[in-house]
Structures are given as structure tokens and as C-alpha cells.
Image (cartoon, rainbow, N blue to C red; front, top):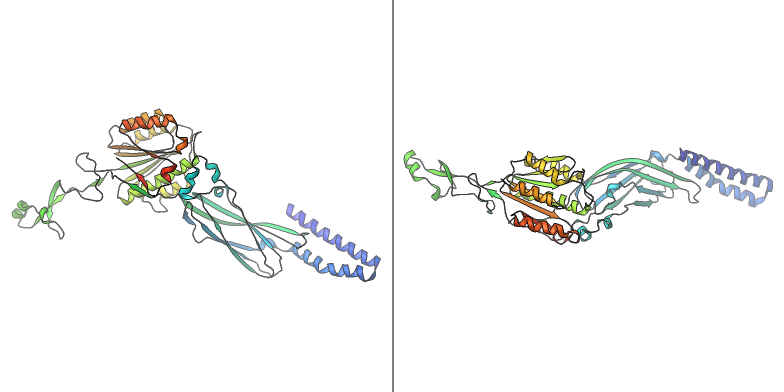
Length: 422
């Protein structure tokens, strides 16, 4: 409505100005007055036509070759503009309507140099580009969105502005153009020293990677090409008159549960939570590479459980969760953790990723360790923000044989990050 009123007022103003010049020429007469009138006549006609120009009928498309990327990557966006007429336009200003979710910057590992002060990574992303269409019907240009943060970002509209060279007529229109950017969390390179595995019989931990156990024979079968001579069962071979080999129990992965603290709190460090998302995703990826059965549980206002059977494709529910994950809820993580672990008693090894420690949480972890083969804690926080109380709790947990892996800004800047499960 305001745009229509302004356009109408501009036309009225031009008509009045033209009427004044015509009246001046009629009453004054002479070459100068009529020269002014006829000189301004083409400008007047152009401005009237510009006021009536159908700016809204422009066809705008946004092309994004890579709409699925990793946090910290750079995205190239091409805007194509098409119009039906060749009406001359001296300039056109294009403004991209950036969503609030893109007002953060993610510089991959380098963001942890500002671990204690995450506010410095906030910024105001704007795109204002001026092009000079003149008589062209098609215009295209490309720009880059750098250091994109994790999340799903909606680009919804493009604002176009134009006007005459004198600034008497100005036109503006917002054209809806929807595109979606999907940004997965940054994956750290982890160097895991131990692999937590066990055998079907007994509860002995193994650090052997991708190797079969050949000490426990569970049966016999017919010889197959590639079997070792030492595997041949000579008694069964003589009895059945056919070469028989021993069948061994294969090493199997312990069922692992990775638990993420997604509970909101007053002392929440945004970058620490972002690091916990990245470490969770990276850890699960490493477990998948090593053929471990690793499930994932995120505890916030609601609990989200993801089984390892769904895999880690981009469209898996687990990966989709990592895109949108945010801290939520008012209950302490320790209370929610106790409730969830009572429901989930199958996991033999548990990895808990937290950004805050207290005595009650330590007590819950001591309870969770009972009856399980392994329990480890990833504590993620800026080195300068770790309190003396948290240092004391870490020492107590280590004395209680709970493995604590501290990940401060110093560790998160390393490549690879060394993870020690001993």
C-alpha cells in the first residue's frame, strides 16, 4: 500500500512539474522557456513510464550447485534475472534476504581460538549488488556465502531496487525465491587408540583391530580354499573321510551407546555445545568405519535415540538430527541421564559427551558403570572456563576407573584429535 501511494505521489509531482514548465513557457514565451520545456519532456515521459513499469513481473531464480555442505565450507550462489521487455534501466540494486541462522560464522577448527568468547563469531551477512541492465533482458551474477554454520538455512526472497538518474523516481519490490541450504556439522579427524571389543564367551576387552579370534573353536565345517593347514581337524577328517576344518568364534563389536548432553543451562557455552555435536558425529563415524554397533542418544527436553542399523547416509534420521540439534529443556542432564540409562540396559560400553560436570552427574556415572564393561566421558569446555570444582570431579572419576577425555580449545585445534580409551 505504501509503495502504491508513493508511486502515485511521484507521478502527481512530475505532472505538476511539467505543468509549471508548460505554464512558464506559455506566459513567458521566448526560446529559453520553450527549450526548457522540450528538453525536460523526454525525461518526463521516461519517468512516467518508469513509474508504470511492471517491476514485479521479473523472473528471478537462484541456482546453488552445492546445497548440501559441511560447516565452514563456502557456497556459491548464482542469481538469474529475466524480464520480458527491453525497457532501459540505468541501474538495479539486488539485496539478498539472509536468514538469522546465517548470522553466525563457522571457521571449522579455527573457531575454537575464540572458545571462551563465542560472541565474536556473530556477524551481519548482507548482500547488496548493483548491476546496470540498460536494454538487457537477462542478467546473472554469482556471489559466495563463506563460513556457513551448521543447520538448515532458508533463502526466501530477493529485493530489487531501481530508479532514474535524478533520484525522483524510486521503485522497490521483494520477489519470493526459495532455496534451502543443508549444512552438516564439521567432522574432526579422530585418532582412536583402542577399539572396545569383546568375545561371545567372557568379558575380556580387545585392542586388536579387524582381526578374528582363532583360539576358541566352536565347531567344524568342510575345508574351503584359503583355510590354513593348522585349522584342519584331523580326527573329524578321518571319521568323515573328508577334509574338515575347525570353525572359530569371530570377534564381535560390543554394542556401544554414545550419549550427548543436549540439556539447556544458564552456563551453556554455545561453542562448547557445537563442539559436542561435532565430536559426537565424528565419533559415530569412526565407530562405523570400524564396524562397531554404535547407537546414539541425545538427551534434552526430549530424548532422541538412533539405532546403528539406520547407517550414516545424509538422509538417515541420525544425520538429519545433527543438522537441527539445539540445547533444550530445563531439567538437569544428570536427572534425565539416570532416567534414560534405566531404560537402556543393553549397551555394554557407554560414551557420554558433556560440557559441564557436577557431583550429582559423577554419582550417576558411577551408578551407570555398574554392570557394564566400559564407561568413558568426553568433557568439552574452554580451558579458561573449566572450574576448580570440575577439575576435582575429573580426578575423582579417574580414580573410580571412569575414563575421562578432556577436550579443550588446545585439543580441538589439533589434527587429528587423539582419543585415548585406555
